[in-house]
Every structure is written in C-alpha cells, then in structure tokens.
Image (cartoon, rainbow, N blue to C red; front, top):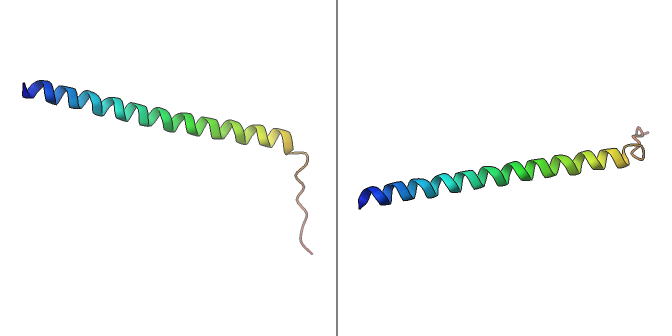
Length: 52
C-alpha cells in the first residue's frame, strides 16, 4: 500500500515539474516573438538622438 503512495506522489511531482517547465518555455518563446515583431515593425521609426 505504501509503495502505491510513493509511486503516485512521484508521478504527480514529475507532472508538476513538466508543466512548470513547459509554461516557462512557452512564456519565454512568446516574449521573444513579441519582441522580434516589435523590432521589425518599429525599427525604422526608432531614432536615437544625442542629448545636447
């Protein structure tokens, strides 16, 4: 009986870790895509002017 509990808790922990890593990866990928799209759209409009 105890062995079933240990295996089940290990399985749930592994699923939790997997979902956390997947969420983190998706979030990083989405941020990178938005950033690159922003740069492509507005790179010609962004002008850097020196302060006097």
